[in-house]
Image (cartoon, rainbow, N blue to C red; front, side, top):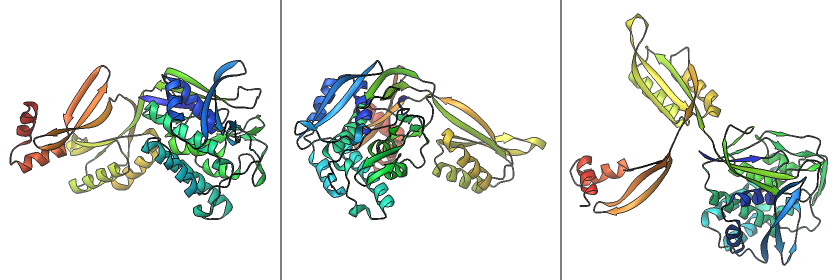
Length: 391
């Protein structure tokens, strides 16, 4: 599985995250040119090679009218306060020529920021006025990250626990403890820690980007690394001030849970299986099984994400009569899937495509085949045969 792993051992900030992703691009100059073509008002991206603690990486500078406007995203806060509400920021985002899905993600990041700020200050989202994260360079950082994530086309995003730093930080509202209140709110549910690095390592922008895009937080998994990107910050610390991004192939693991029942009706079993599927099980199936005392029973097996194991076990004990469950951690190998459309004599037909491990497979979507078969009073096999013959 094509995976992005983000090392947040020196926190997370918008410009550093974006710079790390830029280093993963096959053609960095082309990606930078595309970013500068978005048309953010008076704004231009500049990528510079930068060394921290002897490590070479990239620093992205956002120039507004030819100079750097703010430094919220570089582990310090500036004194120039730009007051922007959510609507005005979304207007700027939507005025750019970035792809629609990139603009939608960037707006989602800002809505998350607005929700955190509103809860911290005891007001509504519409009344929130952004300060540091409302500047053009912060908007540019968020758009860049959203665009580069989309360009890398990864299937899964993982991040390490986040180092938030320690001490205090000066911002528009005064001197606040690290992590700043809005950042702390955004980091709820995310594993965080603080070591001996003095200063704000995780900014509100960085926290909001992680919250929006990261699928899971854990230590670095077993993976085959394809490429590493280093996104550099401004300040110098004893530890290299950088965010590392690893583009890698990761073996997918799933938890397999199985159990037997011999005293439930078919309807009860069917209902339980439906509840498991609705709760996010990747697959659930049941087969007949010979049980003790020669009783005919049912073996039920489900596959789920390892993080969903406890939820699935609870549902099994709630909906099934079993008093014992077996668990196995399995490797899962999946081909990359996509859906395309073709125009046929039966109308538009969707094709499910799979590719990986040196093989390609395609088949027509069942629902479309069934619809065509009903409309033409024939079998699905008849429809497939005509499609294959180009009739």
